[in-house]
Every structure is written in structure tokens, then in C-alpha cells.
Length: 406
Image 1 (cartoon, rainbow, N blue to C red):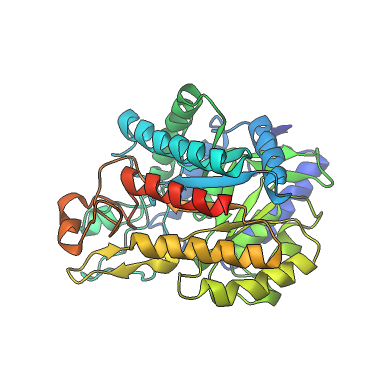
Image 2: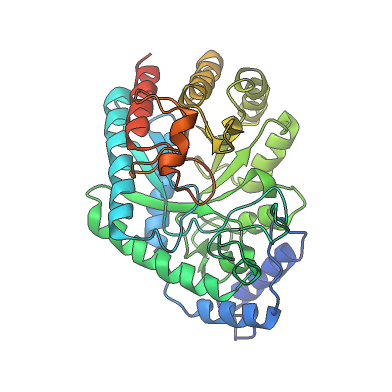
């Protein structure tokens, strides 16, 4: 396997083929992208990143693909979790250690209950870009799109997209990955939302080992496409088609069974078990009604996908005192509905995807500590969406363990 050459450099025939396909993919409409004030600066940063060391190794990604094949076949369970949005300031050893400790503890509880291996994927070492519902905030400033694009500080200068932040994100992610390798006794893989395409295309490998030449991301083992960027005619899906990495795709309640099958056809063309993870984020009031026909239609297609539940994003609301939050009971109920659907249809409820932190935050309501709306301001520290704290994450793992036993 070799590095994918930067634009303008000599290339082998397979590289030229992939370069043409990459150009075609990136020429498609791309949602949620920043407008760099000086595009030539962005091009210069991308050029430098082409020559940067990769954050993940191809053999690690290949190993994860094997583990995910077991999940797709019902012989393992997938746990994915971490910060909603990483920040440069929060990229400290103590914070990373705390988040990894939560992930490991959850995995131990789930593994014992399931009686099968748990594949651990952290939302870490690259989760710096965030999709947003609006282009501007309440002050009329450009919205915060994650530390890889701009700053959360509410000034015009701080909110101006800065492409040099991509290089800083890469350096922070590389440092975090080294910590993961040094701290984790078992395998822990890294993931982030494949959102900022200028960054995603910067560090690629040529992978000619599969049925057709593809590209392998040097930035994450497991990139996923969010619900806001999953347009079938868009650049994100077309880019993901070129990757050899296992891919996640978030699907909300607006996805039809027919669309789900088309995603599967496009993103798993060779019917590779575990190549595609469909991450349902329906909300606890809808999951039991909306998910079954999707699962039935995809299952009938013959593709062995992983079914994973994101119980966080469909259950977000604004509290009476103005904080974006989620209720612990709603999170548990969506996972319960997810399990009920798969048990009824005879398919494997393959995993959960949660936003959690090892820090002692007060961002989500409920749990045994009884966090109420009046408690939210005490330690509300997230850069974007609310996370379960360590205590709530442990309670959630115990609740899911009971579902796995049942």
C-alpha cells in the first residue's frame, strides 16, 4: 500500500484512475462546508497535509474491518462513544484518559452480558468538525462549525473560517492517537464524522488489495456520514464510495426503506460483511414504528450490514432554562425500542453509538443522580451537544447489558 499522490505529481495508472474518480466525487454538491475567505490558503494547507504522517495505519483499519465483519454476522457487539465535539483546549491527557476509561468500563459490562467480544471505537482523535442547522447564530455571526473550522468565541474574527486550523486538528489528532495506542490494553479504534472534505481528502492511501482499487483514509479507522450530509447525489456519499475503510451512515426518521437500500447498494457494492454500519437515530417515540420496514428491506437485499443505535441525536431538546439537553430515560427507551425491533425481526442489534465523557458534567437530565434542569448550568461544558457523564454512561451500559441478556 502506498500514499495517494498530491495533485500534480506523477502517478501510476491506478492512482490516475482514483484521482479522476476523486475529482468527480468532490465536484458534486457538498453540504455543510465552510467558505474559506482565502481559498489559496486552504489549498496550501491541504498540500502540506498531503505530506503529513498518517494518523492511522492501513493494517489497523484492515484489522477493524475483520472485527466488524464479526459484528455483522452476530458474533460481536459494537460500542462507539466519546465527545460530541472535540476541542483543541480539551485535547489533554487527563480528558482523553477519562473518556477512554469510560469506554473500557462500558465495554467490560457489555461484553460480560453479551458473552461475545465488544469492538470499541472512540469518537476521538479527529472529531473536530460539526454540522449545524443554521449558517449564522443569534448574533448574526457565522455559526461555530467545530475547532477545525473556527472558534466558539463569539467575535467576527474568531468565527471567520481559518484553514490553518486543519493542520492544528491533524496535529492534535495525531497526539491523541499516540495516547490511545499507549494507554489501551485492548484494541480501541478511532472515528470521526467525515464532514470537512478539504480535510478528509488530504491524507489518503492507495489500497489495491480488495476487489477494486480504493483509497484508505489515513485520518480515521472508521469515518461516518452524518444525517445532514447523506444526500445520495452529494459529495460525501460519492467520496465514501472510494474508501476501503469501513463506513458508518447515520439515518434519521426521514429515510425511506428504498433510500436505505440504495445507500447499501452504493456503499457496500461487493457485499462485504461489516463494510457498512447503518446508525439509526430515530428518537424514542419513533424508533419502533420507523425502523422495522427499513431493517426488513435492507435485510431482504442480502447485504450483511451492522445495525447500530444512536439514541442521542433523536432525543435532543431545549430545557426550560435554555440548555440543549437529553433525558437519560429517553436514551434508554430508544435503545430498548431498537432491541425490540431487531429481536422481533430476527436480526442482530449490533451496537450503540453514544456521546459520553469521563468528565463530571451536568449536560443530560436524569440518571440515578437525578440531574434536573436547575443543575444543568453547574457543569455544562460541551462544545456542541450534551453528553452523558461517567455515572450516566455506566448506568446506560448496565441497562443495555440487561437487554443483551434478555
